[in-house]
Length: 429
Image (spheres, rainbow, N blue to C red):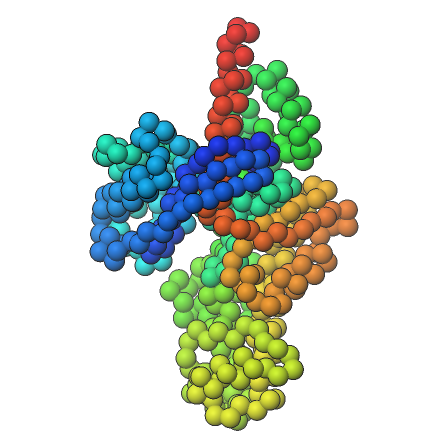
């Protein structure tokens, strides 16, 4: 687990204009977001990252981003004298060392930009903007898409303390008490006097009794790597082993390979290949199933129109209704297993937190688009959590955009409160 240095969820009083930068693929977004309590208005624009920049230098990439940010601010009529807080969603693996400090571990998603590994990407963005006379930014927070999911949902519902992504990949984050993290004890009070914290706690609890942003921090689980140590071997099948062996990172991200959308179709394909080889389905037709990455996720249980269509597109000759039913069943149990494994992870966090009610913010293509996945997930979480605990699932709306603005707003609020507390402390001295 990795600390994100996000110390609080919204309290419903966040107001003002914020910028959000969302970089996570071949396109990136810049947004102007106005927050008013639990309401948000958003204006944004999508910019491309040319292939030459995706494989160029770090300076070229961040100079390009800075140029686009300057154009966006000009288009929105934001004067240079108006320095808006910026939240930066950066969806690449990095080691975060503070709310505005994160060193890139490696590029993914087709990026191969030189001069960035081990470098603070926040500093690179600041340096790129600092070269220009037409932009002045106030970078107050860097986050990943999982934290954005949590914060976007917490903006609407302050009991949201868990964020989950289940799409191409998977990850989770949750609000943890600092007293459970000995290495982070230095963050508990931030040097503020007890009198300040006592008064602040009273204010917070009057607004939202479940909130405790004095002694908590959002932790990035990076749970896709769960099982890399062999701890999932008791449910690891030969089909999972085959998927892992043929992947670009054998032995890594085991949990992710069992539940994420990038791999579910491949697990199903390998199972169906085995059944076809044994003559149990498709009259033994094997060749059509040799196409990797087949997408057979969900279908109508009576007529199987999607299954029949996909099988014919793959080259299966005259699939029977029984063939379609068997293929759909295999895909169903593989996806249901994924939902149950994801539920186990979420339930573990809910049980660990021991709060009367926790909202789980969730996003990702598997949850959004598979017709039965949300219900399977919900039912299994209910089975696995302790009897005295309650939860609800909330679909995130634009976590990488609104979530970034919300993190920026919360960071700005906490900075102001800390400055007020320090001022009170100085006066008392």
